[in-house]
Image (tube, rainbow, N blue to C red; front, top):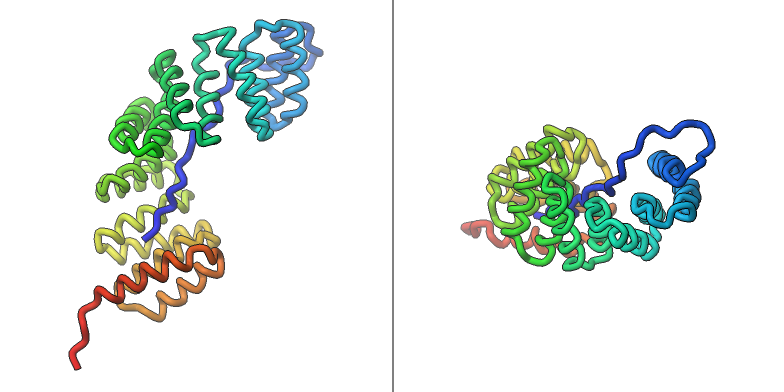
Length: 285
């Protein structure tokens, strides 16, 4: 049984800004606001141009560096984004969103200890920043601190009980700790909040399969595939559940669909299938 163990880092945080008017900007603040608006509309190049102008007019405007870092991050220019976040916190060491966003970029780059330090700083400045708890929890999980991860995700849920991704992430951690009932509860809540989350259905199916509830697991894999027909793992996991039920022909059909979608999964599911068959009672002659 294979979880889809890709957790969800929560998004970049933006500065607060009033709605931008149609008139041409005449100050650093107005360029910053228009740059933010362009960033939110997906015009990263236009945003960067405006934020460059804002910084030229006021080199101490920390929010402009933060917003330019966000635009650069969205374009994939992570080195430049980090430099902007560095400058933002140098100018304003109390800018929690800049620490959070720098942590997110460091997290993405695999710099987990540095990311954790940034998330921790953000939380120290804003104790209600649920996204920082979520992301620090995932970073802690990836360093092997599963208990610390669970504590952070618990706090994220306490602050914001309506974020499906946080429940999904906590389900991953509970799965890793062997708490299948807790994982099922979290995946179920994620599905309640986001009924089109195919990966949550897949992972709930895996947790149910591990408890021997094959019918419920197969129902979850069926739903995952309705939502995402290219989800190779859902075919592989359904194949394992069907194999455990003795439905070998149906299982083989699922394995073939899985391997057609992602041949790299062949070894994993063939090994898992072999173990299921080996565990079957020997037939009497």
